[in-house]
Image (cartoon, rainbow, N blue to C red; front, side, top):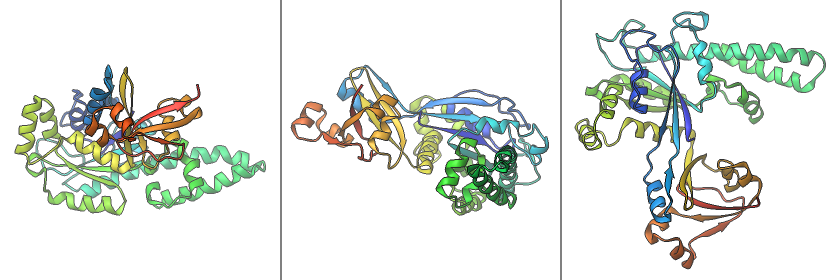
Length: 363
């Protein structure tokens, strides 16, 4: 698995259209609110030419790319936490995702109803973010009530947890998202299992019409907000991308050129997601398969082994590392060994994007 992404936003902002474009599925996408009721799940293999290069040179029987999972939930409205619209019960479906893709309407279309009067991307964002904050407050309140009983009995760890959670609650009540707060490492570790939504990295997606895929004045404020919140930003036309996915590869390329684009929405989103989460890809290969794996940047080689199997991490002895550029140049592992280009590293080696790694471990 590469990473997982929850798709959120108001109703009728293009969430389901974007989901269809990204996953090549055909879930309902209509011009009335609350068309999406049950969460939609889609797992997409990520294109990476390096997988094919390694497979060909090593002679693997198959290639296993890394993947991206999308979860599309019902649109949120003001008062969802109090049962307005479809309520906020669907938020529990995205508590375990790695990041949130917040789709924001930046297009005018008289045929597509808007949940609020007029086009105002920043207002729409505040509506959704407020509901995320209220959901996190609900989660923390339950935890605080539970742990307070232990704190009253004299449990020092419980008392410390209550103090930390109440401090976070104060920030949320001031309408600050967790990702905007400066959290100590201990506090971050404490709340990680709770799946709090406002602490997740956010990628704001400005959904524009086909005539403004590169330039839209409504997106500039959104871009500024993303910078202010240290969030990601992506400008895309869900409608155009959905149309592109229905074309043959050659026609897709022509359509993209007509729109002045060099890559699909999925490719742009993946790149933005990897940058937002600071992710890289490394590879393993043998005669059976070439496999792509995703880890956070600055992960040491022993920790990265845990992505493959816990036995690799626990029994780690050493790693033999090949750089993809040198593998392409010599197109032979035997030649690389002859030139001394297969480096041997211990557990502290930091994995780099594109590394082909052979693990040696005690079974």
